[in-house]
Amino acid sequence: MMNSPQEWPEPIVRVQSLSDSGVSSIPERYIKPPTERPSFCHVIGSERSVVPEAAAEAEGNIPVIDMSGLQSEDGLVRAETMRIVSESCREWGFFQVVNHGVSPQLMDRALQIWREFFHLPAQDKQLYANSPKTYEGYGSRLGIQKGAILDWSDYYFLHYLPLSLKDQNKWPHLPSNCREVIDEYGKEVVKLCERLLSVLSLNLGLKEEFLQNAFGGKEIGACMRVNFYPKCPQPELTLGLSSHSDPGGMTLLLPEHQVTGLQVRKANSWITVKPAPHAFIVNIGDQIQVLSNAMYKSVEHRVVVNSGKERISMAFFYNPKSDIPIEPAKELVTPDRPPLYLPMTFDQYRLFIRTRGPQGKSQVDSLKSPR
Ligand SMILES: O=C(O)CCC(=O)C(=O)O
Image (cartoon, rainbow, N blue to C red; front, top):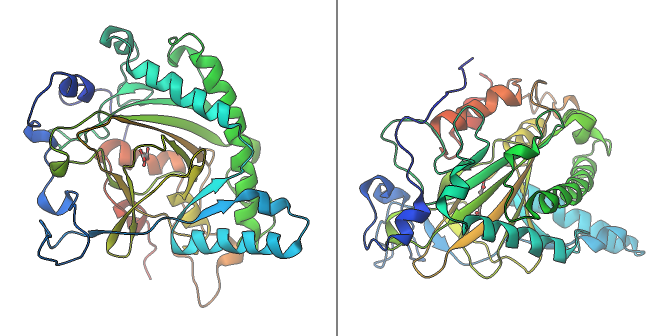
């Protein structure tokens, strides 16, 4: 197994400070190869296409699901809600949920404290500068490859669970209510994740508690990455976050809904997500793709930036306990559908993204068992 790297290969530059300095062109190390750039066009191969070989951007939106339907008195409404969740997991790997039980005020407060955090003076944030050893704290790159092309974003990464990794001293002490709000937000979001895992398990034809147990029962892991995408003078040349699928179990993303940026891959197109107010964007991570023997897909996504508005998003990652092997559920393995993946612990698995940075779906594909 690879060891965790200790230090960044190059001095860290805060993207926010670059943006604030008013540069009119971006440094070369943020310029993506033409096929990875946002195409800002709608039809593959159209004359307007700047990079015809790249996936085009298309109209549409990921499904929006009203979770109150799961408690409806009407059995048909309950069944239909389950069906839409199932279809979204199979067809999109992504959906939005509304009426999910987390207080909208708490969601607003959480986004607000992070907005305030990123607008603190540089020296206050610098106290929490992170290293690739654990990634906890204030960071500006993913991956440790020297000379890598970087993404146009800064972030804050912290552990929420298990309790042995939760260390509030590593969370920002400013703004003053920051730790309290993160704690409360985490508690509510964990409850929602538990509910969603039950729904996914039932939809897979498994016992309600199957996925939660496969994740390690009460010993699951949860961590949070708050992404800050500063304004960018040349958004057509770069990405706020390169294409990747999430390595963990399931992600609940809360973006600010006024500024778009997230794009989800659908066949050969990128669909720009239009966030519904106070919705969470739910997506299937690689570990659920493995556990479901690829019935559910962990889908590639990326973030585009813009020159007019900065953007914040909070990604809450609900993960398996890090040292148990994750493999396809026995119930989902049949002679027609042999196990598609070899077992691996999440600790081993996440070293890949921590070393190489976001790389599309190459990691989960590399896990395919030889046939
Ligand atoms: O900022 C976003 O909309 C997406 C963030 C994301 O994909 C991540 O943090 O893994």
